[in-house]
Length: 350
Ligand SMILES: [Zn+2]
Image 1 (cartoon, protein in one colour):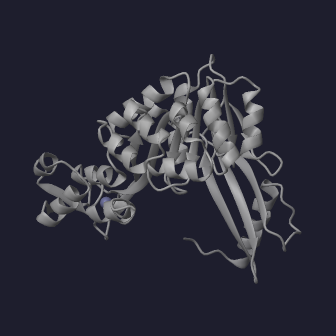
Image 2 (cartoon, protein in one colour):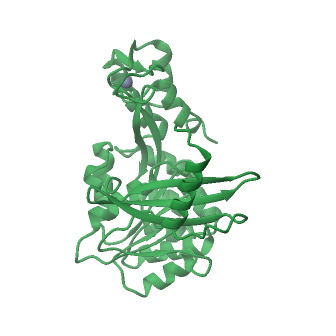
Image 3 (cartoon, helix red, strand yellow):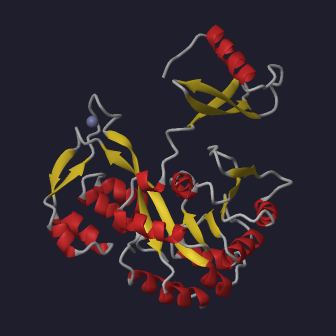
């Protein structure tokens, strides 16, 4: 963090306001805008948010590097079995794929990865987003606003005969119905939903008024994800596998033989080293994915959460978020504390 003099601070304020075409006069109302600059030939978008305070103001600039975040599905870091299933889902001509998780769980990165994989000249792809975080050549991206909510955008998009539709988020009954309907009529539909786990997608959709029969027929896949911090490989602290850790792992159904195969796991080094930030280097995602098998579709049709969980367990790629996070611990990617902190409350849900 750098401290700057009041004079510099005034200059920075003026520069940000000029670049993002905000007046320098308005000091009472919150302001939102954006601007773009280029570094070494690549674009960086900056989203600017200004909040007037009692004294002075709070200015937040969020950097969106237009090239670094746009990885294709094949380049995203994820377990191979999950990637293979996602590839299978997006190879289908129709179906609804829902990615769930709280804000900041990496859903956008996954969805753009899928879009990038699908982005070929013969496919028409339309999105409705709030906000448009990354602009992608070859894709028609609409920004929702009070006069263009997701439901209305989706209706308008369907009249444009797309092959692939991305709806930023399903949060009301009408959008849920339209998304399922679109997925039944020859469109691959990608969207997100706010819920805690992949099975709970069922509960949430039924709660907001979607028809379980249509959901079952339209289902492409239900996925949940979270981000866990990644241990710095240079300064992480080795620790022998012990009974307590093994017990935690068995609790979330990690197979005994996978636990037995590992003798060392790693702990976080709070001091860090020269090549990391306090012992951590970025984050990686953990996943939970349910595929639309016959048993799963039957459970969805009956809106039966327990039956859905049982049917999901029969699938090779299915493991809970907590289980997937434990695999990251076994691989030395993250620590047991981090895995439990991010996904621990998931394992004993309802
Ligand atoms: Zn380090």
